[in-house]
Length: 186
Image 1 (cartoon, rainbow, N blue to C red):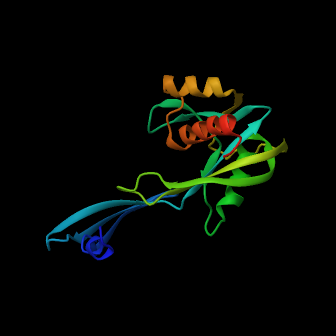
Image 2: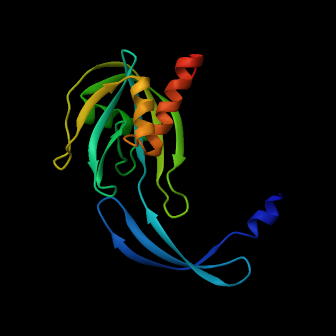
Image 3: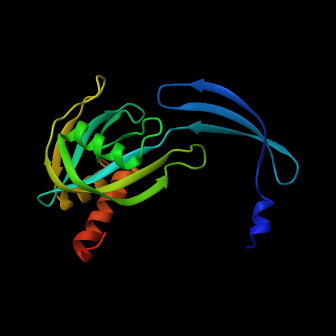
């Protein structure tokens, strides 16, 4: 498909109405012009982005288990957190790893980056592989309650099947880890 034809499908913003401005996200409603000249609205969640870490310690993956209010259940996830303003994602990844697990990495390698839900949000999530782990100091946020664990690949795969791991970043990390174990490359 030609680039020119794709451009003709682009939606032009006519107006933007700010609905909500929170600590983590903001919500806006854009009125847009459709390619056929009609109009529609788009609800857009703005998010500063986040970083997450696949941290391997003695052939186990460091995870945190915490209650996720939107899901009304506990989830097992890789360590992750929101980017601070103008923060480099790799810096965020290292900070979140230590804050949530009490471990520091001597090196962080990019694994992947993806948009979490491009149909309504602009959040981009960066995932890093943490290597050379050493004990640091846990420093949870005041409103953060979690349990740290180190699980095997078999446990991680079982947790995916059970729904205890069901977020995209952690599922991606588990499958990347499995590929790493099979091929030696990540």
